[in-house]
Structures are given as structure tokens and as C-alpha cells.
Image (cartoon, rainbow, N blue to C red; front, side, top):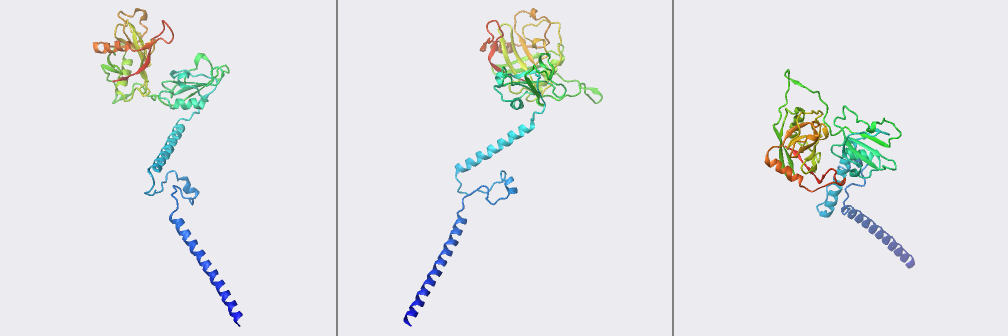
Length: 361
């Protein structure tokens, strides 16, 4: 009978030990679950978000704990800024798509940046993107042949909404001998409008300014406008002076000086309609006279600083103003003495070593 009681006691002890072990395991499991929930690491995007929530996770911001360090906050701010920049670049790319591309033709136009200034370019798409990001450019040409590989020239025409750029050297589009590919963007131009608009039954007459000031880094000089010499040119100068941001970047600048002869520059605008007319006024240019350069209608202009009338220029230039007051003439003579050089060698055109941006006031 005694051995039987001892066996029952042993069996009861084993059952109690097993029950105690199971209770301990259950306790530690519950404790681990509790602490893992309480001390979970911070995450900006929860692991249980579904696909719909994930699509908007870039814009959604989960509240951060107050204990987040300043360095982590800085990294998060930099990440958000990077995403905003990427979105901006994507918008710009979408805005200036480049569908109007023509192979075996070279568009002509006023040069905004030549191939050297633009630098090596991989493709016509890259050339188009550079045009899209360059003020004043709305025509681009790219060459992928061995002798001109990677050249991208940025140009502009005044009215791309009504005119297609001309082809250089009289070539025809699709000529296999032309290694260039060209395209055009509808940007940086003044939209065409009817000339001679009427208001109230009468043709509106534009009020012209009597003078404009050209602001330079070394001072300003005043041009007295002469509509009796050429009204259309004076209208253009009036618009430049009255239009906000008419000159952008270096669209207006001085770039050439010749002692005893001239100061030359360009008055180009992307928001003011360009002058298209010339007039061979029967007057020789005299000291201080201002006109369009090269017998053109602009936008390149020059101030004549020769002591005697320019007989060799004859009547080839459209003259539209004059610099008269001593202070303005002194500024011009100071510009002539600015550092310049003749990159083409002796007895060639003299250019400023650093072009001067200018504005019209």
C-alpha cells in the first residue's frame, strides 16, 4: 500500500510541474506581445498599408514623435525638397514636349547660344531640353555626324506662331547632304495680333516717349528719340521702356567697342514685338547718333562716336535717336575704355572681354 501512495505523489508532482511550466510560458508570451507593441520603431509608412494608400503615401505625412532628432528632421526635409524638385522638372518636361522635329534640315534664326557655348550634347532630345530651359530660344538644331558630332545650336525667330524658320544655305528639307536635325518650340515670343486695331471707331495712336535711358554697370546714358526719323523704331524703344522685364538675362547687352567709332549692343526682347522696318533716312550719322546695326531693323544697335560725319556708312542705317548731354556721352566714352580684345586678330572687330547687361528705362 505504501509504494502505491508514493507513485501517486510522484505523478501529482509531475502534473503540477507541467502546469506551472505552461503558466510561465503563457505569461512570458503575453508580456513579449505587450512590450513589442509599446516600443515599435517609428515608420513614416505603415507596413500594413494597401496599394491604394501607398499611391498617396508621398503626400501623406504621419505624425512624428516629439523625440525625433533634428538630424532626422533635416534628412526628411531634404527628401521632401528633392521630391518637389523632381516634380518641377517633370512638369517642365511635360510642358515642352519636342514633337516638331525635322531630319536633314538646318533651321536658320538669330543665334541665342552657339555650339561651343551650349557644349557637347548627346541627342536631339537633349538639345530640345536645353532650348526649353534657355530664355529666348525657340529654335534648336543638332548635328550627329562625325565632323560636328554633338553640336547643338540654340536660335530664335520672332513669330514662330505664324512663320516657320527658313532653311540655311538655300537647302530643301529632307536633303540627305544636310547632317542637321531641327526643331521648334512655341515659347518666348509675342503672339501675333492685328495691326491697326480700332477702339471707339477711331484708330488708336500710341503715345511715344521723348527719351529713354540705357542703364549699364558703369552708369546710364540717355537717348533722345526721333520719331520724325523713324517712328516704328521709336515705338519699339517706347515699348521696351514701358514693359516690365522687357530685357531678360542678357537679351539686352553691350558687346562691342571701337575707339573713335562706336559702342554696339543688342536690344532684344522676348515679350515686346520686334521692329521689322528699316528706313534709309537721308542723313549721315554724326557724333552721338543711334541706329540699328548692319543696315538691319534691329535688334542690334550702335551709338556712333566718330568726330566727323560717317560718310563711308552713307545712308545704309536706320537712325532713330541721338545722345546729346555731356554726362551720357562721358558714360559712353568710359565704356569704350573698358577692357576689350580682338579675338579675330589685328585689324578685326573689337569686343568687350565681358559683355555688359543693360536695361531700358
